[in-house]
Length: 349
Ligand code: MG
Image (cartoon, rainbow, N blue to C red; front, side):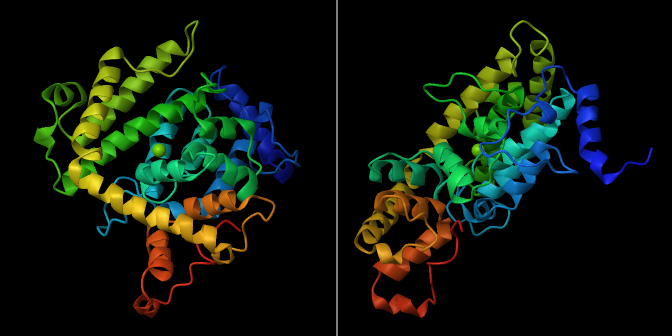
């Protein structure tokens, strides 16, 4: 049957009603946006959110933000961008298998790390120490999409981006639960691979019970985690307590792998040296902008206190942008040979 343009979105919404699980988030029934707006004639609310996220500047900056290694030179190492794409892949696979809303999971997955500062979690901890009001990447992500880039996303996407907090024990949707679990699987999976690529570890270093339970190759491990998530959740979303879940065996193996990665890779002594370098760069930049607010991007919201604008500016930087800004502002003049103008790139409009 031929469709008029005006019927495309309605037809997709009708399809969602027909094929999705009764507990799926249906775009037609979205809780809406902070600022109400006219509907798109072609895309559903969640498809539109995905496109807004993909076209945002914060999303493009993820390509030069640390996942595990700072500004990696090798082309095959993950960055926050490829991490986000891998989280989206796992999330969509699971959502589609469970007949949940694939567009919503994709939106949340692509947006879930938008607020990450340069230098990964190390950068996050240091900004948290520097800022009088504290810093957390998920709160910063919300600030980017709500204020700095004003994407006016649906409440379902904002809920997934926010994650769980001390005051929030549950997500609004099963789709957000998928991304939350997929994120953990994706990073553990690819950080093992990147650490192996970097020669920090070999497959054989992993504890034997992890290899036995999750599999001895990277393909096996990801496949087993995702398959378990789909099969286990298929049962639990039809129970009295519908939720996205893993069997206890896989959940424990994932927790053990996570702990092993912290002990042997993330918090290894060589990486702690990097922490001091990151602290030096971010602290110096923070102090520099306190003394020289005119060096901040003119695009930052003028109605905010200086400390808040500095935090937005530094958090928005990519790894290499932060390093270049440090060189330009805080090393002796010989570095002016670098024609760096850190003022207008890498910032929200
Ligand atoms: Mg993540």
